[in-house]
Image (cartoon, rainbow, N blue to C red; front, side, top):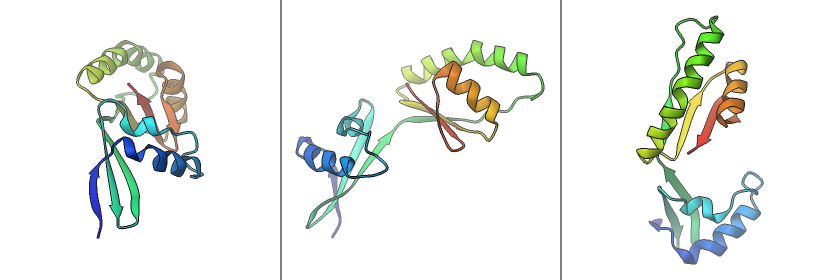
Length: 127
């Protein structure tokens, strides 16, 4: 039978060991799962923990430029508007901003100008 419960201090060692041994999450620490404004649920069975599920409040953006060719105006607008958008998101308890794009120039600009991290077609920025 699978049970669920909130993460607690007793989970740290099991979680730490599972992260160290996970080829996909070697650089993740247990603190990631208890960061402010996040919730973590532990799913277990009679043998112990199976899954740690961390939930955060993410703001998903969709961007539509009226004219993709007017890069100067688009960049100026993003430089002007994004800092306020990020500040309001953080004030509203969002912990990250996420958006998807296949536009390599937009990805490069957002990583350089705003600190987004690229993961495939997804860009993420922790607040």
